[in-house]
Image (tube, rainbow, N blue to C red):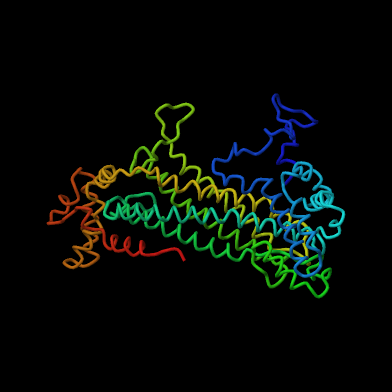
Length: 452
């Protein structure tokens, strides 16, 4: 939560402001997603992060009480105070600059909000990183749940679409050119396979999101002999996993989360990229129902949902790279590496959460045009069946001679404007439906897979 997030940085320098500039403290300064088309709702907002930090502090008191280090009254006192709506998130963000993280001012405000009998137990034995790491794991857990539900929904809808178009013949394109016939069902089955791959990776990460508790130097010294018990109790109180060690500079959880999120963005980006190609005016094999309009051209119906998912997919790798770079963290607690994670992790959760919620809408509104697919198959006058011709002639002429004959026929077909079958001068079935190989069987096999 930086000062720039709530608008304190004014353009123009020297205190200048543009006409109509929004005051940082006004409700209009809240990030509404003006420049981000995909969003994961309020789950990654400043207030959501603040609440997660407060939840971590409240869970710490529960763990202290469970291990006999705090009275039950402290649990109820802190729980009553630990509500984000009771704190000034902008003030905390401003004061965080002097300490390098938001927990220091937050703990001061939380301590001031509880009865005197409980002030000595707030934040006892913990360090700021324990609370930030645990809070961000809580944010991640709260975002991953809806993400997984979205991916389950997307996989189910893709299964229906693949089944419906199991035999819908279309052009397979390689290196941008027509290759051989395939089916739209097989393409969709591929989208579903990637969706399930992403779902399985995210689910694996979600169950292992760990609590963080190590104290000042990772030894839990402030808890005496109760350190391991405190970690276990803290994990139970938060609902997060119990780690073997404090992971202040052992950033496997962040790296695994970054990798799973980036893969998910890429998997959905593949679906979006295919839709964007197939929706081009000159291809027109699919379209988005109720596509977006243009500010200048009334005839446009842009594939907006695919565009938004593709945009999220393009941003995710760089964010994940920053998080992976932070694995190189010195000492027992680092300067800079840990701090560099906060914004990219939240942005990655926000982008991927938005993409997973948009992708099912994209598939729901996808209009498939089998007639256009058929027309595109016919654009090369049968040349798309040249591989079949080579296969058919190989038994008679041998592979090299068969390829040479078909090469000549393809050139003649293009030069003379005749079909490949006429150019070959042989009995040759050039219907695309006759050269689909195992496409149907592959679709059937893919649809038997379920999420792990």
